[in-house]
Image 1 (spheres, rainbow, N blue to C red):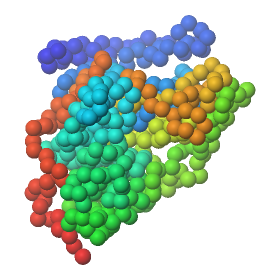
Image 2: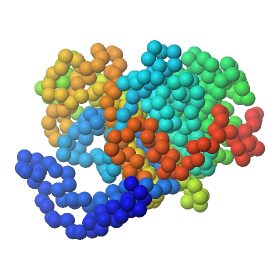
Image 3: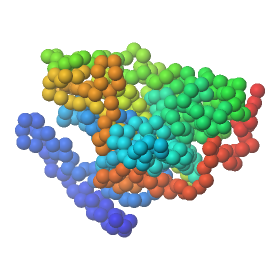
Image 4: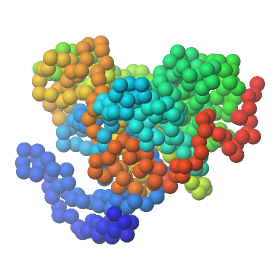
Length: 493
C-alpha cells in the first residue's frame, strides 16, 4: 500500500467516524447481541485506527512485552479481573492487531542446525525482535553462529535517541538483556557466573550481561537483580570493584526504592539512572496459589490474596516505572525521541510455577503499564506503542478436573474459572508452548503488525518507524563517542 493510498483510506475512515452512532442499550449476555463488544460505540475509535494505519515515522516507540503472555494467559486474567464480557483497559484497547510466529532455530553444531525449534525460550525470542535475527534457545543477541547482532536499543542510542530498559525481573534476565548484551548463554549474569565461558572479561570477551549493560549505558534501566551487582569485576578497567561501585564511579544515578524512583529528575549519558529495587525478581501483586492434581475440578474457587511483599505500597510498580521512564526520556527540546522497552516478566515465571494468582496479578500490573504508555501516546500523538509477548505458555482454561495440576478461582463474574497446568508434575517447571501470539499496536506505523508476521518483523517495524540507520557501526562494548572525555569513562577512586 502506498502512503497516498493509505492516507485516502484513513481519511475515509475518519470521515465515517464522525457520524453519530445509534444509541444502543446493552442487553444481558443471554439476549441476542448481549455479548458484543462494539454495541454502543460502533467504530468510535476509527480516528485512532486510521492514524495507526499510516506507515509514517514516529518520534518515540514504547515496546511492551508480557513474558509468557499467550492468548490463554490474557483470557485468564480478563475473566478473573473484569469478567468474560469485560475489557482490560490497556491490553485490550490497542486498535491494530495481528499475530506473529515465534519459533527459534537450532544452533551450529547441532544435527538440526538452522532448522526450526518450534518451542522457543525468552532469549531466542527476545533476540528476534531486538535484532531481527532468529537464533537458538539460550542465546542473547547472538546468531546461531555466535556472531553478535546489533540491537534496537544500541541502534537507537547510536542514532541519537534516548533509551530505556524496564522490567519486573532481574535486569540480567533474558528479555531485558537482549537489548543491552551479547552472550552465548543467558545465565551469564555476572563475573561470577560459570557459564560465561569465552564471553567473560577474564577470557577476553565483552563481559557478563551486567557488565555489558553498564557499557551499553541506557539512559534509564529499572528492575531487580541487585544481588549480581554485588559481584566483583575480575578483569578489565574496573577489575577489583563491585559492579555497583563501578556503576557509581561511572556516573550512574543508583536508586533502590520508591522514594528514589519518584525523586529522580534527570536521566542522560552524564547521569543515567540505574534502578535496583530487589535482590532478584520484583515480588508479584498477588500471593501465590498452589495448583494440585485435580485442582481444576474443585467445587468452590479461591480468591486471589494480596502479596505482603509486593512493592506497590512503596511506589515501585511496573506502571510507576513506565511513567517515570517516559517522563525522563521525553525531552521535547531534543530533535530526537526515545526507544523504551518494558517487560512484565512474572506472567511467565508464575506460569512456570503453576501459580494462577501470581500470573494474573502480574498481568494486571502489565495492563496498567500499557495504560500508562497509551495515555502518553494519545497525548503525544507521535508515539508508536506495541504490546505483545515473547512466547506462549501452558496455562489452559478447562471444564473440570484434569490428570495434571490445576486451580479453581472465583472470578469477577462470580463463577468458577478452572485452570489446568498439564506440562509438568508438582514441583516441576511448566513448559512454554510454540503457539503464535497476539501483537497489537497504536500510533504511527502501527500498520506494521497487521496480519500474520514473524517476531523478527517487529525489529523492522520499530526501526522503520524511528527511521533508524541500521547500517551504522556498533561495537561491543558500545563506543562512547562524543562522551569519551566524560569522567564516567575513566576509573575514579
